[in-house]
Image (cartoon, rainbow, N blue to C red):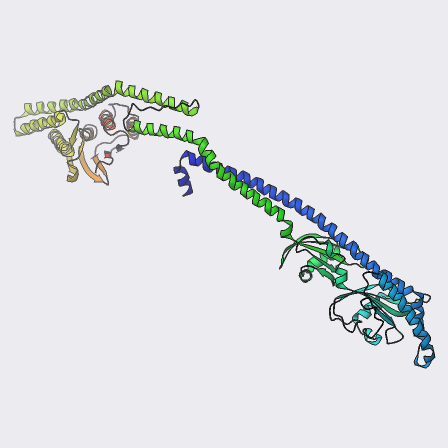
Length: 610
Protein backbone atom coordinates (compact mmCIF):
# COMPACT_ATOMS: atom_id res chain seq x y z
CA UNK A 1 0.00 0.00 0.00
CA UNK A 2 2.84 2.39 0.88
CA UNK A 3 4.49 1.60 -2.45
CA UNK A 4 1.28 2.47 -4.31
CA UNK A 5 0.87 5.73 -2.38
CA UNK A 6 4.50 6.68 -3.06
CA UNK A 7 4.26 5.85 -6.78
CA UNK A 8 1.09 7.97 -7.12
CA UNK A 9 2.54 10.96 -5.27
CA UNK A 10 3.90 13.99 -7.11
CA UNK A 11 7.63 14.49 -7.60
CA UNK A 12 7.56 17.37 -5.12
CA UNK A 13 6.31 15.15 -2.33
CA UNK A 14 8.62 12.29 -3.32
CA UNK A 15 11.60 14.65 -2.98
CA UNK A 16 10.24 15.92 0.34
CA UNK A 17 9.89 12.37 1.66
CA UNK A 18 13.38 11.54 0.38
CA UNK A 19 14.80 14.57 2.22
CA UNK A 20 12.99 13.50 5.36
CA UNK A 21 14.40 10.00 5.14
CA UNK A 22 17.95 11.28 4.52
CA UNK A 23 17.75 13.79 7.39
CA UNK A 24 16.27 11.15 9.67
CA UNK A 25 18.96 8.59 8.84
CA UNK A 26 21.85 11.06 9.13
CA UNK A 27 20.54 12.72 12.31
CA UNK A 28 19.72 9.41 13.93
CA UNK A 29 23.13 7.97 13.07
CA UNK A 30 24.97 11.04 14.39
CA UNK A 31 22.74 11.23 17.47
CA UNK A 32 23.19 7.53 18.25
CA UNK A 33 26.94 7.79 17.76
CA UNK A 34 27.12 10.87 20.00
CA UNK A 35 24.94 9.12 22.57
CA UNK A 36 27.19 6.05 22.68
CA UNK A 37 30.40 8.11 22.83
CA UNK A 38 28.97 10.37 25.55
CA UNK A 39 27.71 7.38 27.50
CA UNK A 40 31.11 5.68 27.42
CA UNK A 41 32.89 8.91 28.34
CA UNK A 42 30.53 9.66 31.23
CA UNK A 43 30.77 6.08 32.49
CA UNK A 44 34.56 6.23 32.40
CA UNK A 45 34.48 9.49 34.37
CA UNK A 46 31.96 7.97 36.76
CA UNK A 47 34.16 4.90 37.29
CA UNK A 48 37.19 7.09 38.02
CA UNK A 49 35.19 9.43 40.27
CA UNK A 50 33.61 6.57 42.21
CA UNK A 51 36.95 4.86 42.67
CA UNK A 52 38.42 8.08 44.01
CA UNK A 53 35.41 8.39 46.30
CA UNK A 54 35.79 4.91 47.84
CA UNK A 55 39.52 5.50 48.28
CA UNK A 56 38.79 8.67 50.22
CA UNK A 57 36.15 6.87 52.32
CA UNK A 58 38.63 4.06 52.95
CA UNK A 59 41.19 6.61 54.05
CA UNK A 60 38.75 8.15 56.55
CA UNK A 61 37.71 4.71 57.81
CA UNK A 62 41.38 3.83 58.24
CA UNK A 63 41.73 6.99 60.33
CA UNK A 64 38.96 5.81 62.68
CA UNK A 65 40.44 2.33 62.83
CA UNK A 66 43.73 3.89 63.88
CA UNK A 67 41.96 5.61 66.78
CA UNK A 68 40.65 2.24 67.91
CA UNK A 69 44.01 0.57 67.36
CA UNK A 70 45.89 3.25 69.30
CA UNK A 71 43.43 3.02 72.20
CA UNK A 72 43.64 -0.78 72.36
CA UNK A 73 47.43 -0.73 72.10
CA UNK A 74 47.99 1.99 74.69
CA UNK A 75 45.62 0.39 77.19
CA UNK A 76 47.12 -3.07 76.66
CA UNK A 77 50.64 -1.96 77.46
CA UNK A 78 49.72 0.68 80.06
CA UNK A 79 51.69 -0.06 83.25
CA UNK A 80 48.80 0.73 85.57
CA UNK A 81 46.39 -1.40 83.57
CA UNK A 82 48.91 -4.28 83.59
CA UNK A 83 49.36 -3.95 87.38
CA UNK A 84 45.59 -3.86 87.85
CA UNK A 85 45.04 -7.03 85.80
CA UNK A 86 47.94 -8.83 87.53
CA UNK A 87 46.58 -7.71 90.90
CA UNK A 88 43.19 -9.16 90.01
CA UNK A 89 44.86 -12.53 89.42
CA UNK A 90 46.02 -12.66 93.07
CA UNK A 91 42.92 -11.11 94.62
CA UNK A 92 40.69 -13.64 96.49
CA UNK A 93 38.08 -13.50 99.25
CA UNK A 94 40.72 -14.62 101.75
CA UNK A 95 42.90 -11.64 100.88
CA UNK A 96 40.48 -8.83 101.65
CA UNK A 97 43.31 -6.89 103.19
CA UNK A 98 44.75 -6.45 99.71
CA UNK A 99 41.45 -5.17 98.21
CA UNK A 100 42.00 -1.50 99.25
CA UNK A 101 45.36 -1.47 97.48
CA UNK A 102 43.85 -3.08 94.34
CA UNK A 103 40.92 -0.60 94.31
CA UNK A 104 43.40 2.27 94.35
CA UNK A 105 45.14 0.75 91.31
CA UNK A 106 41.79 0.37 89.55
CA UNK A 107 40.99 4.06 89.97
CA UNK A 108 44.40 4.99 88.63
CA UNK A 109 43.80 2.85 85.49
CA UNK A 110 40.43 4.49 84.97
CA UNK A 111 42.17 7.84 84.80
CA UNK A 112 44.27 6.53 81.91
CA UNK A 113 41.08 5.39 80.14
CA UNK A 114 39.55 8.85 80.66
CA UNK A 115 42.58 10.50 79.14
CA UNK A 116 42.40 8.21 76.11
CA UNK A 117 38.65 8.70 75.71
CA UNK A 118 39.05 12.46 75.70
CA UNK A 119 41.94 12.33 73.23
CA UNK A 120 40.29 9.96 70.75
CA UNK A 121 37.49 11.61 68.80
CA UNK A 122 35.75 8.51 67.52
CA UNK A 123 36.02 6.29 70.64
CA UNK A 124 32.80 6.39 72.68
CA UNK A 125 33.34 3.79 75.44
CA UNK A 126 36.05 1.51 76.85
CA UNK A 127 35.58 -1.66 78.96
CA UNK A 128 38.26 -3.73 80.68
CA UNK A 129 37.72 -7.31 81.92
CA UNK A 130 39.97 -9.55 83.93
CA UNK A 131 39.65 -13.28 83.39
CA UNK A 132 40.29 -13.77 87.13
CA UNK A 133 37.19 -12.11 88.55
CA UNK A 134 33.59 -11.96 87.36
CA UNK A 135 32.99 -8.28 87.88
CA UNK A 136 34.30 -5.92 85.09
CA UNK A 137 37.35 -4.06 86.27
CA UNK A 138 36.39 -0.74 84.70
CA UNK A 139 34.04 0.85 82.18
CA UNK A 140 33.91 4.42 80.99
CA UNK A 141 31.45 6.13 78.66
CA UNK A 142 32.25 9.40 76.84
CA UNK A 143 28.68 10.65 77.13
CA UNK A 144 28.67 10.82 80.91
CA UNK A 145 32.17 9.70 81.81
CA UNK A 146 30.43 7.02 83.87
CA UNK A 147 32.66 5.02 86.16
CA UNK A 148 29.93 2.49 87.00
CA UNK A 149 30.34 -1.04 85.71
CA UNK A 150 26.76 -2.05 86.31
CA UNK A 151 25.83 -1.20 82.69
CA UNK A 152 27.96 -4.05 81.28
CA UNK A 153 27.73 -7.80 81.70
CA UNK A 154 29.83 -9.82 84.13
CA UNK A 155 32.66 -11.93 82.77
CA UNK A 156 30.79 -15.18 83.40
CA UNK A 157 28.08 -14.15 80.89
CA UNK A 158 30.52 -12.62 78.45
CA UNK A 159 32.41 -15.88 77.91
CA UNK A 160 29.23 -17.60 76.70
CA UNK A 161 28.92 -15.29 73.63
CA UNK A 162 30.11 -15.99 70.09
CA UNK A 163 32.05 -12.74 70.12
CA UNK A 164 34.17 -13.95 73.04
CA UNK A 165 35.08 -17.10 71.13
CA UNK A 166 36.27 -14.98 68.19
CA UNK A 167 38.38 -12.85 70.55
CA UNK A 168 40.02 -15.95 72.01
CA UNK A 169 40.65 -17.40 68.52
CA UNK A 170 42.28 -14.14 67.40
CA UNK A 171 44.92 -14.62 70.16
CA UNK A 172 45.73 -10.97 70.64
CA UNK A 173 44.78 -9.65 67.21
CA UNK A 174 42.09 -7.01 67.01
CA UNK A 175 38.58 -8.34 66.32
CA UNK A 176 35.82 -6.08 64.95
CA UNK A 177 32.08 -6.40 65.58
CA UNK A 178 29.07 -4.45 64.41
CA UNK A 179 26.38 -4.66 67.10
CA UNK A 180 22.82 -3.83 66.04
CA UNK A 181 20.46 -1.94 68.39
CA UNK A 182 19.32 -4.24 71.21
CA UNK A 183 22.42 -6.44 70.99
CA UNK A 184 23.89 -7.26 74.43
CA UNK A 185 27.37 -8.51 73.80
CA UNK A 186 28.88 -6.69 76.77
CA UNK A 187 26.35 -3.91 77.38
CA UNK A 188 23.29 -4.61 79.45
CA UNK A 189 21.35 -2.35 77.08
CA UNK A 190 22.31 -0.94 73.68
CA UNK A 191 20.03 1.65 72.13
CA UNK A 192 22.14 2.43 69.06
CA UNK A 193 24.15 0.37 66.59
CA UNK A 194 27.76 0.09 67.76
CA UNK A 195 31.10 -0.78 66.22
CA UNK A 196 33.33 -2.65 68.64
CA UNK A 197 37.03 -3.52 68.51
CA UNK A 198 38.29 -6.09 71.04
CA UNK A 199 41.47 -7.98 71.85
CA UNK A 200 43.07 -10.12 74.51
CA UNK A 201 45.34 -8.35 76.99
CA UNK A 202 48.49 -10.32 77.73
CA UNK A 203 51.04 -9.96 80.49
CA UNK A 204 54.01 -8.25 78.86
CA UNK A 205 56.68 -10.61 80.10
CA UNK A 206 55.02 -14.01 79.98
CA UNK A 207 52.49 -13.23 77.20
CA UNK A 208 49.91 -14.93 79.35
CA UNK A 209 46.31 -13.82 78.78
CA UNK A 210 45.13 -11.76 81.74
CA UNK A 211 42.00 -9.96 80.42
CA UNK A 212 39.92 -8.55 77.58
CA UNK A 213 39.80 -4.93 76.40
CA UNK A 214 36.78 -3.61 74.48
CA UNK A 215 36.64 -0.27 72.63
CA UNK A 216 33.29 0.82 71.11
CA UNK A 217 31.79 3.68 69.13
CA UNK A 218 28.24 4.51 68.04
CA UNK A 219 27.80 3.68 64.34
CA UNK A 220 26.26 7.11 63.73
CA UNK A 221 29.53 8.71 64.84
CA UNK A 222 31.44 6.34 62.60
CA UNK A 223 29.14 7.20 59.68
CA UNK A 224 30.00 10.89 60.00
CA UNK A 225 33.52 10.11 58.83
CA UNK A 226 32.33 9.42 55.25
CA UNK A 227 28.82 10.91 54.90
CA UNK A 228 30.05 14.45 54.03
CA UNK A 229 31.90 12.97 51.05
CA UNK A 230 28.68 11.74 49.38
CA UNK A 231 27.54 14.53 47.07
CA UNK A 232 25.45 12.48 44.57
CA UNK A 233 21.72 12.28 45.19
CA UNK A 234 20.44 8.82 46.26
CA UNK A 235 24.00 7.45 46.44
CA UNK A 236 24.84 5.07 49.28
CA UNK A 237 27.88 3.64 51.06
CA UNK A 238 28.00 0.14 52.49
CA UNK A 239 30.93 -1.20 54.54
CA UNK A 240 31.22 -4.94 55.14
CA UNK A 241 33.92 -7.10 56.70
CA UNK A 242 35.75 -9.86 54.85
CA UNK A 243 33.02 -12.32 55.81
CA UNK A 244 30.28 -10.15 54.28
CA UNK A 245 28.88 -8.90 57.60
CA UNK A 246 27.57 -5.36 57.67
CA UNK A 247 29.75 -2.82 59.50
CA UNK A 248 28.11 0.45 58.50
CA UNK A 249 25.87 1.84 55.78
CA UNK A 250 24.55 5.16 54.62
CA UNK A 251 21.75 6.00 52.18
CA UNK A 252 19.61 3.42 50.36
CA UNK A 253 19.30 -0.06 51.96
CA UNK A 254 21.71 -1.56 49.46
CA UNK A 255 23.19 -4.24 51.75
CA UNK A 256 20.19 -6.59 51.59
CA UNK A 257 20.33 -6.61 47.76
CA UNK A 258 24.06 -7.32 47.81
CA UNK A 259 23.59 -10.30 50.13
CA UNK A 260 21.02 -11.83 47.75
CA UNK A 261 23.60 -12.01 44.95
CA UNK A 262 26.25 -14.53 45.98
CA UNK A 263 28.15 -14.08 42.73
CA UNK A 264 28.43 -10.33 43.32
CA UNK A 265 29.60 -10.89 46.91
CA UNK A 266 32.33 -13.27 45.68
CA UNK A 267 33.51 -10.76 43.06
CA UNK A 268 33.58 -8.00 45.67
CA UNK A 269 35.65 -10.15 48.07
CA UNK A 270 38.14 -10.98 45.31
CA UNK A 271 39.05 -7.34 44.63
CA UNK A 272 37.93 -3.92 43.47
CA UNK A 273 35.08 -3.86 40.91
CA UNK A 274 33.15 -1.38 38.79
CA UNK A 275 29.84 -2.90 37.67
CA UNK A 276 26.34 -1.95 36.58
CA UNK A 277 23.74 -4.19 38.22
CA UNK A 278 19.94 -4.29 38.37
CA UNK A 279 18.28 -4.16 41.80
CA UNK A 280 14.68 -3.79 43.03
CA UNK A 281 15.45 -0.12 43.70
CA UNK A 282 16.73 0.45 40.18
CA UNK A 283 19.89 -0.02 38.15
CA UNK A 284 23.01 0.86 40.14
CA UNK A 285 26.64 1.52 39.35
CA UNK A 286 28.65 -0.01 42.20
CA UNK A 287 32.32 0.41 43.01
CA UNK A 288 34.14 -1.57 45.70
CA UNK A 289 37.56 -1.03 47.30
CA UNK A 290 39.51 -2.64 50.15
CA UNK A 291 42.96 -1.58 51.29
CA UNK A 292 42.52 -1.11 55.07
CA UNK A 293 44.14 -3.22 57.79
CA UNK A 294 40.86 -4.63 59.09
CA UNK A 295 39.96 -6.11 55.69
CA UNK A 296 36.81 -4.04 55.43
CA UNK A 297 35.30 -3.56 51.95
CA UNK A 298 33.93 -0.18 50.94
CA UNK A 299 31.01 -0.41 48.47
CA UNK A 300 29.80 2.79 46.82
CA UNK A 301 26.50 2.68 44.93
CA UNK A 302 25.16 5.38 42.59
CA UNK A 303 21.83 5.21 40.68
CA UNK A 304 22.56 4.67 36.99
CA UNK A 305 19.96 7.30 36.05
CA UNK A 306 21.94 9.94 37.95
CA UNK A 307 25.04 9.15 35.90
CA UNK A 308 23.16 9.24 32.62
CA UNK A 309 21.40 12.52 33.37
CA UNK A 310 23.72 14.31 30.94
CA UNK A 311 23.15 11.66 28.27
CA UNK A 312 19.39 12.01 28.65
CA UNK A 313 19.77 15.71 27.99
CA UNK A 314 21.88 14.96 24.91
CA UNK A 315 19.25 12.49 23.69
CA UNK A 316 16.44 15.02 23.98
CA UNK A 317 18.52 17.73 22.34
CA UNK A 318 19.29 15.35 19.46
CA UNK A 319 15.61 14.46 19.06
CA UNK A 320 14.67 18.15 19.06
CA UNK A 321 17.31 18.87 16.39
CA UNK A 322 15.98 16.02 14.22
CA UNK A 323 12.40 17.27 14.61
CA UNK A 324 13.49 20.84 13.83
CA UNK A 325 15.37 19.69 10.70
CA UNK A 326 12.32 17.77 9.51
CA UNK A 327 10.04 20.75 10.06
CA UNK A 328 12.42 23.17 8.36
CA UNK A 329 12.85 20.79 5.43
CA UNK A 330 9.19 21.26 4.44
CA UNK A 331 9.26 24.98 3.54
CA UNK A 332 12.85 24.75 2.24
CA UNK A 333 12.01 21.81 -0.04
CA UNK A 334 8.83 23.48 -1.28
CA UNK A 335 10.73 26.71 -1.92
CA UNK A 336 13.49 24.94 -3.87
CA UNK A 337 11.36 22.54 -5.89
CA UNK A 338 8.20 24.59 -6.47
CA UNK A 339 9.60 26.12 -9.70
CA UNK A 340 10.63 22.66 -10.91
CA UNK A 341 7.20 21.27 -10.03
CA UNK A 342 5.47 24.16 -11.84
CA UNK A 343 7.56 23.58 -14.98
CA UNK A 344 6.77 19.86 -14.99
CA UNK A 345 3.06 20.63 -14.48
CA UNK A 346 3.09 23.01 -17.47
CA UNK A 347 4.68 20.30 -19.58
CA UNK A 348 2.08 17.70 -18.51
CA UNK A 349 -0.83 20.08 -19.18
CA UNK A 350 0.52 20.84 -22.65
CA UNK A 351 0.95 17.13 -23.38
CA UNK A 352 -2.68 16.48 -22.33
CA UNK A 353 -3.91 19.24 -24.67
CA UNK A 354 -1.80 17.81 -27.48
CA UNK A 355 -3.23 14.34 -26.83
CA UNK A 356 -6.74 15.79 -27.22
CA UNK A 357 -5.89 17.24 -30.64
CA UNK A 358 -4.64 20.73 -29.79
CA UNK A 359 -1.56 20.70 -32.02
CA UNK A 360 -0.93 24.42 -31.52
CA UNK A 361 -0.01 23.89 -27.85
CA UNK A 362 3.43 24.95 -26.63
CA UNK A 363 5.10 25.83 -23.33
CA UNK A 364 7.28 28.81 -22.51
CA UNK A 365 9.98 28.27 -19.89
CA UNK A 366 12.71 30.76 -19.07
CA UNK A 367 14.94 28.06 -17.60
CA UNK A 368 18.34 27.40 -19.13
CA UNK A 369 18.69 24.07 -17.36
CA UNK A 370 17.59 20.55 -18.29
CA UNK A 371 13.91 21.50 -17.92
CA UNK A 372 14.40 24.34 -20.38
CA UNK A 373 16.04 21.98 -22.87
CA UNK A 374 13.18 19.51 -22.35
CA UNK A 375 10.60 22.25 -23.04
CA UNK A 376 12.43 23.39 -26.20
CA UNK A 377 12.65 19.81 -27.42
CA UNK A 378 8.95 19.26 -26.70
CA UNK A 379 7.98 22.41 -28.61
CA UNK A 380 10.10 21.34 -31.58
CA UNK A 381 8.52 17.89 -31.50
CA UNK A 382 4.95 19.26 -31.49
CA UNK A 383 5.75 21.59 -34.42
CA UNK A 384 7.23 18.71 -36.39
CA UNK A 385 4.27 16.43 -35.67
CA UNK A 386 1.82 19.17 -36.71
CA UNK A 387 3.74 19.69 -39.92
CA UNK A 388 3.76 15.99 -40.68
CA UNK A 389 0.04 15.73 -40.00
CA UNK A 390 -0.69 18.69 -42.24
CA UNK A 391 1.47 17.38 -45.08
CA UNK A 392 0.95 13.64 -44.91
CA UNK A 393 -2.38 12.90 -43.22
CA UNK A 394 -4.67 13.33 -46.27
CA UNK A 395 -2.31 11.57 -48.64
CA UNK A 396 -1.92 8.69 -46.20
CA UNK A 397 -5.69 8.25 -45.98
CA UNK A 398 -6.00 8.18 -49.76
CA UNK A 399 -3.07 5.84 -50.05
CA UNK A 400 -4.65 3.51 -47.51
CA UNK A 401 -7.93 3.44 -49.44
CA UNK A 402 -6.10 2.75 -52.68
CA UNK A 403 -4.14 -0.02 -50.98
CA UNK A 404 -7.35 -1.62 -49.73
CA UNK A 405 -8.88 -1.42 -53.20
CA UNK A 406 -5.79 -2.93 -54.77
CA UNK A 407 -5.63 -5.76 -52.23
CA UNK A 408 -9.31 -6.63 -52.74
CA UNK A 409 -8.97 -6.41 -56.52
CA UNK A 410 -6.22 -9.04 -56.42
CA UNK A 411 -8.69 -11.67 -55.20
CA UNK A 412 -11.36 -11.38 -57.95
CA UNK A 413 -9.49 -12.20 -61.21
CA UNK A 414 -8.19 -15.56 -60.12
CA UNK A 415 -11.68 -16.82 -59.23
CA UNK A 416 -13.26 -15.16 -62.25
CA UNK A 417 -10.98 -16.97 -64.66
CA UNK A 418 -11.71 -20.39 -63.19
CA UNK A 419 -15.48 -19.80 -63.09
CA UNK A 420 -15.73 -18.57 -66.69
CA UNK A 421 -13.71 -21.53 -67.84
CA UNK A 422 -16.17 -23.86 -66.12
CA UNK A 423 -19.20 -22.11 -67.63
CA UNK A 424 -17.59 -22.40 -71.04
CA UNK A 425 -17.12 -26.15 -70.71
CA UNK A 426 -20.68 -26.56 -69.41
CA UNK A 427 -22.15 -24.58 -72.30
CA UNK A 428 -20.28 -26.69 -74.84
CA UNK A 429 -21.30 -30.02 -73.32
CA UNK A 430 -25.02 -29.45 -72.80
CA UNK A 431 -27.53 -26.76 -72.32
CA UNK A 432 -29.74 -26.98 -69.19
CA UNK A 433 -30.96 -25.10 -66.08
CA UNK A 434 -27.73 -25.81 -64.26
CA UNK A 435 -25.97 -23.27 -66.43
CA UNK A 436 -28.58 -20.67 -65.58
CA UNK A 437 -28.07 -21.33 -61.87
CA UNK A 438 -24.33 -21.03 -62.26
CA UNK A 439 -24.62 -17.74 -64.12
CA UNK A 440 -26.98 -16.38 -61.44
CA UNK A 441 -24.63 -17.39 -58.63
CA UNK A 442 -21.72 -15.85 -60.50
CA UNK A 443 -23.51 -12.56 -61.03
CA UNK A 444 -24.64 -12.48 -57.43
CA UNK A 445 -21.09 -13.27 -56.36
CA UNK A 446 -19.71 -10.34 -58.37
CA UNK A 447 -22.31 -8.00 -56.92
CA UNK A 448 -21.39 -9.01 -53.33
CA UNK A 449 -17.69 -8.64 -54.11
CA UNK A 450 -18.11 -5.13 -55.44
CA UNK A 451 -20.45 -4.15 -52.56
CA UNK A 452 -21.04 -0.76 -54.18
CA UNK A 453 -17.46 0.26 -53.40
CA UNK A 454 -17.88 -0.15 -49.63
CA UNK A 455 -14.89 -1.76 -47.94
CA UNK A 456 -17.02 -3.23 -45.17
CA UNK A 457 -19.93 -5.67 -45.32
CA UNK A 458 -22.11 -7.60 -42.89
CA UNK A 459 -21.45 -11.18 -41.82
CA UNK A 460 -24.75 -12.09 -43.56
CA UNK A 461 -23.46 -10.79 -46.92
CA UNK A 462 -20.14 -12.57 -46.44
CA UNK A 463 -22.07 -15.77 -45.71
CA UNK A 464 -24.18 -15.40 -48.90
CA UNK A 465 -21.01 -14.77 -50.94
CA UNK A 466 -19.45 -18.00 -49.62
CA UNK A 467 -22.65 -19.93 -50.33
CA UNK A 468 -22.66 -18.83 -54.03
CA UNK A 469 -18.94 -19.47 -54.31
CA UNK A 470 -19.21 -23.01 -52.91
CA UNK A 471 -22.28 -23.71 -55.09
CA UNK A 472 -20.28 -22.85 -58.20
CA UNK A 473 -17.35 -24.97 -57.01
CA UNK A 474 -19.72 -27.85 -56.21
CA UNK A 475 -21.02 -27.77 -59.78
CA UNK A 476 -17.43 -27.98 -60.99
CA UNK A 477 -16.13 -30.67 -58.61
CA UNK A 478 -19.43 -32.52 -58.13
CA UNK A 479 -19.12 -35.38 -55.56
CA UNK A 480 -15.49 -34.60 -54.87
CA UNK A 481 -16.58 -31.54 -52.79
CA UNK A 482 -18.79 -31.62 -49.69
CA UNK A 483 -19.32 -28.46 -47.63
CA UNK A 484 -21.15 -27.15 -44.55
CA UNK A 485 -21.75 -23.51 -43.53
CA UNK A 486 -22.65 -22.91 -39.87
CA UNK A 487 -22.64 -19.24 -38.81
CA UNK A 488 -24.36 -18.07 -35.61
CA UNK A 489 -27.38 -15.88 -36.44
CA UNK A 490 -26.53 -13.49 -33.55
CA UNK A 491 -23.49 -12.22 -35.44
CA UNK A 492 -25.04 -11.82 -38.91
CA UNK A 493 -25.50 -8.04 -38.59
CA UNK A 494 -21.96 -7.32 -37.40
CA UNK A 495 -19.92 -5.39 -39.96
CA UNK A 496 -16.53 -6.74 -41.02
CA UNK A 497 -14.06 -6.09 -43.88
CA UNK A 498 -15.39 -7.84 -46.99
CA UNK A 499 -13.69 -10.87 -48.50
CA UNK A 500 -11.84 -12.05 -45.39
CA UNK A 501 -13.41 -15.56 -45.23
CA UNK A 502 -13.77 -16.37 -48.95
CA UNK A 503 -9.98 -16.46 -49.59
CA UNK A 504 -9.61 -19.19 -46.96
CA UNK A 505 -12.43 -21.19 -48.65
CA UNK A 506 -10.82 -20.68 -52.06
CA UNK A 507 -7.45 -21.68 -50.62
CA UNK A 508 -8.90 -24.95 -49.28
CA UNK A 509 -10.53 -25.87 -52.61
CA UNK A 510 -7.59 -25.02 -54.89
CA UNK A 511 -4.73 -26.30 -52.71
CA UNK A 512 -6.49 -28.89 -50.55
CA UNK A 513 -9.54 -30.50 -52.21
CA UNK A 514 -8.78 -30.24 -55.95
CA UNK A 515 -5.37 -32.00 -55.84
CA UNK A 516 -6.88 -34.84 -53.81
CA UNK A 517 -8.13 -37.76 -55.93
CA UNK A 518 -11.19 -38.49 -53.77
CA UNK A 519 -11.89 -34.85 -53.00
CA UNK A 520 -12.86 -33.76 -49.49
CA UNK A 521 -15.08 -31.61 -47.31
CA UNK A 522 -15.06 -27.99 -46.12
CA UNK A 523 -16.66 -26.58 -42.96
CA UNK A 524 -17.21 -22.84 -42.52
CA UNK A 525 -17.98 -21.78 -38.91
CA UNK A 526 -18.82 -18.41 -37.33
CA UNK A 527 -19.57 -17.88 -33.63
CA UNK A 528 -19.05 -15.75 -30.51
CA UNK A 529 -16.48 -16.53 -27.85
CA UNK A 530 -16.80 -14.06 -25.03
CA UNK A 531 -16.46 -10.63 -26.63
CA UNK A 532 -14.60 -12.01 -29.67
CA UNK A 533 -16.02 -13.02 -33.08
CA UNK A 534 -14.39 -16.12 -34.55
CA UNK A 535 -14.50 -17.55 -38.13
CA UNK A 536 -13.04 -20.96 -39.01
CA UNK A 537 -12.49 -22.69 -42.36
CA UNK A 538 -11.61 -26.39 -41.98
CA UNK A 539 -10.89 -28.78 -44.87
CA UNK A 540 -9.97 -32.44 -45.21
CA UNK A 541 -7.67 -31.88 -48.15
CA UNK A 542 -4.06 -32.91 -48.68
CA UNK A 543 -2.70 -30.46 -46.08
CA UNK A 544 0.93 -29.40 -46.44
CA UNK A 545 4.36 -30.74 -45.49
CA UNK A 546 5.80 -29.53 -42.18
CA UNK A 547 8.49 -27.45 -43.87
CA UNK A 548 5.95 -25.62 -46.04
CA UNK A 549 3.71 -25.08 -42.99
CA UNK A 550 6.59 -23.45 -41.05
CA UNK A 551 7.41 -21.28 -44.08
CA UNK A 552 3.78 -20.13 -44.35
CA UNK A 553 3.66 -19.18 -40.65
CA UNK A 554 6.96 -17.31 -40.95
CA UNK A 555 5.82 -15.32 -43.99
CA UNK A 556 2.49 -14.41 -42.34
CA UNK A 557 4.30 -13.16 -39.24
CA UNK A 558 6.76 -11.16 -41.35
CA UNK A 559 4.16 -9.96 -43.90
CA UNK A 560 5.96 -11.56 -46.87
CA UNK A 561 3.69 -12.23 -49.84
CA UNK A 562 4.22 -15.37 -51.89
CA UNK A 563 2.03 -17.48 -54.14
CA UNK A 564 3.82 -20.71 -54.66
CA UNK A 565 3.02 -22.47 -51.42
CA UNK A 566 -0.53 -23.42 -50.46
CA UNK A 567 -2.27 -20.13 -51.15
CA UNK A 568 0.22 -17.92 -49.37
CA UNK A 569 -0.66 -14.98 -51.60
CA UNK A 570 -4.38 -15.04 -50.65
CA UNK A 571 -3.70 -15.52 -46.93
CA UNK A 572 -1.14 -12.70 -46.82
CA UNK A 573 -3.65 -10.54 -48.68
CA UNK A 574 -6.28 -11.13 -45.97
CA UNK A 575 -3.70 -10.65 -43.22
CA UNK A 576 -2.59 -7.27 -44.61
CA UNK A 577 -6.17 -6.01 -45.04
CA UNK A 578 -7.03 -6.99 -41.46
CA UNK A 579 -3.90 -5.22 -40.26
CA UNK A 580 -4.90 -2.03 -42.07
CA UNK A 581 -8.44 -2.28 -40.73
CA UNK A 582 -7.80 -3.29 -37.07
CA UNK A 583 -4.12 -2.63 -36.41
CA UNK A 584 -2.04 -5.41 -34.88
CA UNK A 585 -3.94 -5.78 -31.57
CA UNK A 586 -7.47 -6.03 -33.00
CA UNK A 587 -7.27 -9.44 -34.72
CA UNK A 588 -5.43 -12.74 -34.77
CA UNK A 589 -4.98 -15.42 -37.51
CA UNK A 590 -4.15 -19.00 -36.49
CA UNK A 591 -3.13 -21.60 -39.10
CA UNK A 592 -2.96 -25.37 -38.50
CA UNK A 593 -2.04 -27.95 -41.16
CA UNK A 594 -0.88 -31.56 -41.29
CA UNK A 595 0.12 -33.41 -44.43
CA UNK A 596 -2.56 -35.84 -45.73
CA UNK A 597 -4.91 -34.77 -42.91
CA UNK A 598 -6.13 -31.30 -43.74
CA UNK A 599 -5.88 -27.57 -43.19
CA UNK A 600 -7.68 -25.10 -40.91
CA UNK A 601 -7.62 -21.32 -40.75
CA UNK A 602 -9.03 -19.33 -37.82
CA UNK A 603 -9.71 -15.57 -37.77
CA UNK A 604 -10.37 -13.94 -34.37
CA UNK A 605 -11.73 -10.39 -34.32
CA UNK A 606 -11.00 -9.16 -30.81
CA UNK A 607 -13.70 -7.30 -28.85
CA UNK A 608 -16.01 -7.19 -31.89
CA UNK A 609 -18.91 -8.92 -30.13
CA UNK A 610 -20.06 -5.84 -28.19
